[in-house]
Image (cartoon, rainbow, N blue to C red; front, side):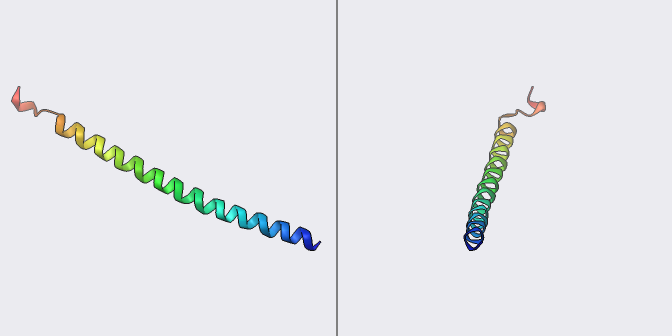
Length: 54
């Protein structure tokens, strides 16, 4: 029974650590995608010619 408690404690510790890594990776990925979208939108606005210059 004592071994089972140790196994459960180690599993919870592993899941906790993996959860933190997944959270940070997901958060970083979302921020990178948002920055990429903003850069792309700014490039499109800069390249777009004003309609009055036809």
